[in-house]
Length: 222
Image: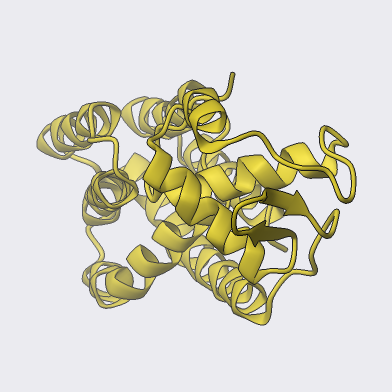
């Protein structure tokens, strides 16, 4: 049974249904189980299942026939241009983040004060307990990364980061909706590695850990 925990749930439910169709669970022309069966399997309400089916019907994968049921009419669908463009924007933003944050992490490891380090660690902890919504997670993540940029004590880097935040936030929200974090613990560990390197005043390790994290994000969309 696949449980869905991130919003929007209808998008996630549609993705799970499409994955099950692609895996061969339902053949071309097969009738899907009813909403009362699918809803508990997905861990969502019947209205969410209906919206997911509507989305897949709009993409030509399902056909909802009144009085008969929902049938598989295609086994896959080409990626739409909107999603292609969103992916391109995400890659562009991650590349810009890399340019700013890798250098900021190295400088922070050299210049951070005890107060800076406390702020970074508090932000890391806040990121750990951030709410379940994509937006809350992204806001906590951006706040964490900003503490590192501030700890670099370079006003230009801070101004660049702050000016860039609105677009970063939009891209990161899109990214997590397209491809949710597969392993939240590994993701948090990657951020903790950056903090540890900054705390130990190891600029090379801090920049490597930051680059590795951002490269891993980019690899899913490049």
